[in-house]
Length: 305
View: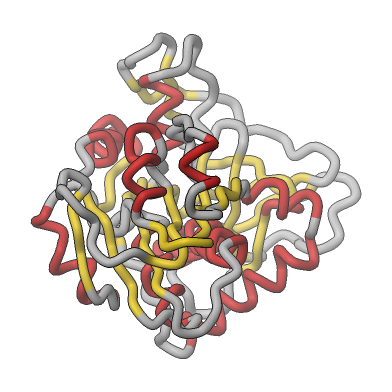
């Protein structure tokens, strides 16, 4: 089979022939039909001291199962997060990180909706939203952010603000349901909001925190890092909450399945629409990474084996 690898920081990415992996206990072997490209995967190349396997979101058909697997069998269509080599014709998923794909749903829709949607929905739940509250979503045009904008609206947000890196993305975010769109470089981020769902971190933490009304909540779910001064929390009785999807998948499987069911319900009802920005062949993985690095994507970037 083919898989994409990187041997040094910064690349290059290349396709190599590799043996077909075997699923271990609790694992599924999946023939990949669509592979999601994420910012954490890109950062494995650009920031990690020693790049590891390019894992990621995949959707496809189960071709073999390991010992102890009870929820899936060969022929089942699934989507989930691969922690090993995911940029490949075949990949191994742990059963706990896999979700069934309903009949008739395309692999692209599945890979664009489930993992990004789970992160968006989990971050929203962590914010404890109340009907009528105002929400702000950073990276609002990205693979997770474009779903978070829609989910905030379905959960009854009275006002939804999208924050983006480029004003050219504003129309896209408004179509998703945002009432207002601001850019990171704006002098002010407008009328304060009750909660912020932040995927960016770093230098944006300060303005994101400043955008909160008193007693507002900021949920940080990205891998961008950053620091916050305690005094900035004290003066407005604000709070910062960290969210990581893997902890839910491994520690609260019933909640994980409940959230998956909610995403599929909203998708079937037409209330949640995943958008695929671009499709790339495995051989063009570097171009797919370039879309993420350049912040040019509107929705999900995917590889098609």
